[in-house]
Image (cartoon, rainbow, N blue to C red; front, side, top):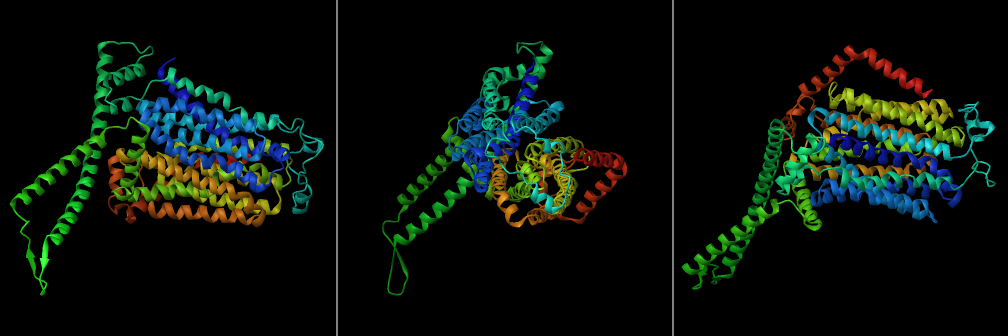
Length: 603
């Protein structure tokens, strides 16, 4: 088995675990509700627990991979992926489920930061897109697998469940056909099956420990640690199946790659040293000015008229002493700046390093890019993109679908997500980032409005179709487009802290959306979806106003866009919509086929 195959397997496993956690909770809520008699508010906390845990997990992952390397961090990620599911499977109180979900969420946050970074550093350019797509596709397959497990372990279908959708689609039939949990076990052959649902992820979670044995460390991180020989061996293992010494031509190729990575790392170090030295010099200059002003005030007497009289203590020796002190301070400042450039090898040093990067990110030349990333992260989750999936079972049951069939019908919803991911891979470099996100926002807006209409009418088929349209629109645009844009707009030196900050906000907004979704649905009914439609439309306006097109541009050109207002010019808007019209003329048949396929799968 080649090293690249192992890396692809890691991508599949990481994406599968993430997707399984996203997909399992909807079906498990039925058993949890019956065993612990949980309220909807408690269920919202259980669902949102993963997102809440992922917020600190994102920061923890950024620090761990900086301090201890990517491979060890992936292995350590097995701890929350094992402890969390086991704790949930053995839970005796509902709050233990919340705690278990928070622990799993920390694993999700760590993997969301570390795994993409490791894949990007280890995969060759020719296959990087394929390996990343494996991660995204396996995320969707993990969700489908979780929902099938939920259905298989859930309640057996009764005679009334032979029809997937209720015969009478009216509002009165909807309220009359709402499932009522049976106290005699009628709807659940084994009430403890939900424990298997939440505990199964511990098995593949253990496999992450094998990263220490099967995978090699990232050459980039090894070079950052000045471990050149280890970096050379790591590149050899990527080039050769057995990781042994190979022929001269391959060795030359490996050494050339090593030098390229080394040159890139040194440039990042030089930029970091220059920026931090300038900041240290600025602080030192301000400090010296304050000390000088205080010394002048202290060493001068004033007469009745307020005229200063020089003190006899101010002489040449004092001036020479101050000069030597200033030189010593400057030397210490230079030494401090050089020391800060060295890569952190301990957790606390890495934490301080990351903290300084956050400050520089907020104050430096990346402010505009940071604001854009934070805005995109907000809208990525504020439109209820994960809440719809987590609570799709509840939404379908409200329209008259039986409990068991509602779990089964969540499978086509996730299938639309997988199809959307493939469509996104085809369009992100053809259509462009900006128009793709705008069309996705428009599709989400339409999907939410249709969902509001379907929910209000009590039509389960219409509601399912609307959910599928919404999920397809999100998966084909924002789901992958956000991460592509995030990887382009920041300089290499600040990409890791920027990714951690943006990812943490994304998870935080997702947690808040999950925790209020059911309460909003019970209070506002179909108007809940109208509100989310308005937020989706707001994301379209945000992209139109603040996101420049980055398709076909080098990373340097993309980053230069955020240092000026050139992307606000009308020409950029015309270019984006020209690409939409051009693409539609060339691909309208394919696009129509996708719509028909999506609608047909929904029905």
